[in-house]
Length: 103
Image 1 (spheres, rainbow, N blue to C red):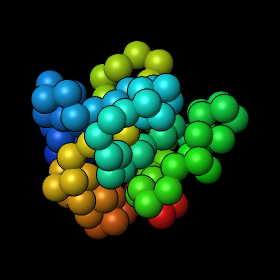
Image 2 (image 1 turned 30 degrees about the vertical axis):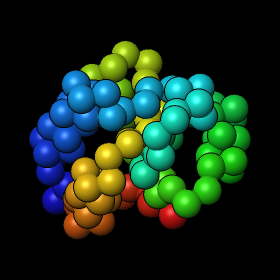
Image 3 (image 1 turned 180 degrees about the horizontal axis):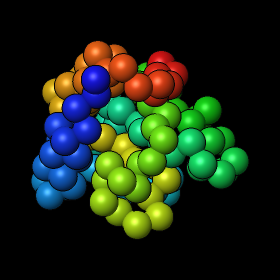
């Protein structure tokens, strides 16, 4: 089973250390490399178009991104830390829930 508490903890650490880009504009204009993109399944078409422009990045679609990030109205985030992004992807792969990993 996916350990949501660990994912929330990782995202909270990333947010406090400024390694989390929140929103499509911040992901697109980030000077640091984005290693993982997580987006909500209710994201709009303009957010999904952004995903087509980004190359060499893992992408995960989640059910309720707002709940994971504790950011109201959050639909897409980018993770700038390589190690934590690998840990989060590993947690999603090991989890039993129906998450979609695109790349």
